[in-house]
Amino acid sequence: MPSVKRSLVLFVLVFVTTTLLVLTGSAVVRAEMAPISDEAILGRREPIVLESLLARYTYFAQDGSGYQSKAGPPGGPGSEWLHVHEPQVEVVFRQGDRIRHRLWLPIDIVTAASPVTKPDAVSAASRYNQAVALDWTTSYRATRAVTLSLREGVHVERMFRSYVLGLSASFASENEDRTFTVGVSQTNDWFDVYDVTGRRHGHANRSTSGVSFALSQVLSPTTIGELNYGLTVQAGELGNTWGGVPTNTGDRDSESYPGRRLRHALVGRLAQFLPWNGAARVFGRFYDDTYGIVAFTMELELLQRLSRAIYVRASYRAHVQSGATFYTTRTTPGTSPATADSDLQELGARTLGAKIAFDIPTGNTFLGARTTHLDVAYERYFRTNDLHVDVISCAVGFRF
Image (tube, rainbow, N blue to C red; front, side):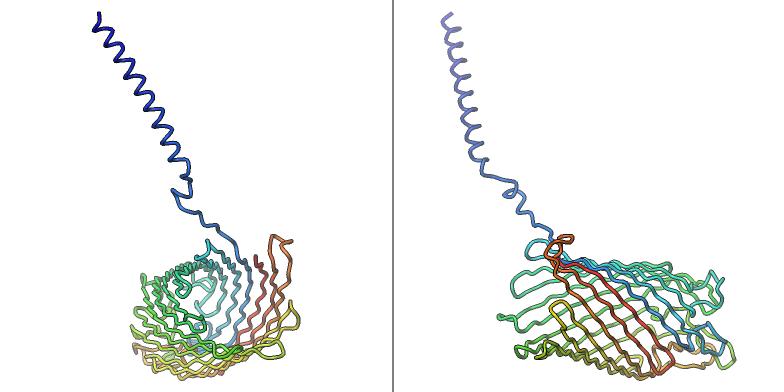
């Protein structure tokens, strides 16, 4: 009996001690866990803030003639009539203090005369086409002086797919008056192959690899300059495959291109503030490639602020180039490479443009936007080989 009592007493002591330990331990655990919040475990949640939203509509109307087009006699030239309707949306938003995103969504609705020989040639490249693209660029400010950017894009239409990936890094000086940027990009195209008669021959690929270097410098309190060099290497099928070249036999042959193209571009820009509340921008470009094309481009842009909310812009652009070594308007059947593409012949071009824009303060009263943006622009492009384009653009946007 005494052993039973001792056992009972021992059991009670163990039970009480264990209970006290459990209760004390739970209190200690609760005391230790109390300061640990969701942010401490998962990290601080970065807010997403909308910076701007812009919707734009652009209309392109092209007219003229060229020897590549099949919308004409076999010996050419044929019509290069083209209409494009392009609505697009651009969204810019921040994720925290370091990350910034730009999302761009353009849609193209194209009507063209040159791709087909007759309207009902359904097997050929269509004169009616729709395309949509999605382009996303993310910038990360690693430090005050270093910004990294990643660009991803996809382009889709009925007979064509394109994918692009780009990386760039910008390095600013200590006082941020000088910035050096280096970037690389890779684009892969995949598309249907047609011959000049409209017959389909499977698929083809095109690769475009690029690298660029840019240096911008504050030259004075009112002047900024930039120098940019870009190198591009293309390989694969470099034509549209359905373009034609008139032959000396009175027929048309399929155009053909070299399987590789190396392109160099050197660009200079200068922006100058003008004392009457305006600005002038000068652009110059030298271009050279392995097709034998050498080109020079100059552009002058003048901006004038009429009030705090309104500014206007006028621009003039001049371009001159030599032709590709294999450009021809008459070829012997079977000759390769050979093209009658009017973009690759010797030519001169001019562009005249005008724009008026309104930045209207709204004080967060409309959709929470600080500023409402409106603009209307017009450009007239014309060149020496019987081609001209009218471009009309209008936009509405909000800055938050």
